Length: 84
Ligand code: FES
Image (cartoon, rainbow, N blue to C red; front, side, top):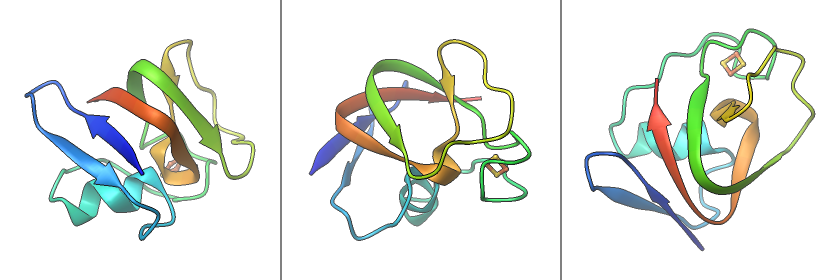
């Protein structure tokens, strides 16, 4: 179980019931832009403020340093993110 902290002070628990961080964010009513949901387009790009994530499959979309794609990743321990 990982805690996913957001800039507004809220957080959600990633308990494995959702396959990806994008699914978990949506389940908790956080709006995240998306298109492919498979690491190709980069539309879901978010900032990783602290902690670490693991990609389920290596994304093809360009990701800048400090950013990640929630559609194809899961947290490794507690993380803090910012929705872009
Ligand atoms: S939705 Fe396309 S890379 Fe995440």
